Image 1: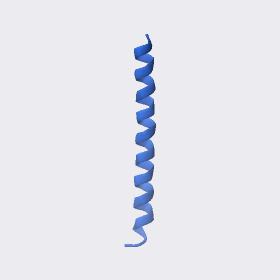
Image 2: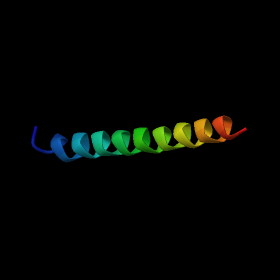
Image 3: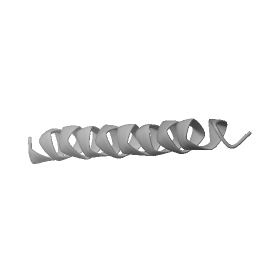
Image 4: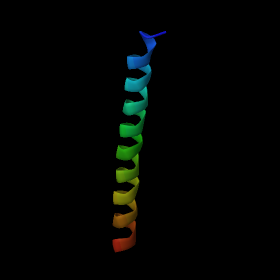
Length: 36
C-alpha cells in the first residue's frame, strides 16, 4: 500500500549507497595493488 512505498524507496536508496561505497573500496584496493 501507500505506507510501504517510503520504506521500499529508502531500502533501495540504502542499497544503492552501499553498492557505491563497495565500488569505491574495490577501486581503492585495485589502485593499491596496481601501484606496487
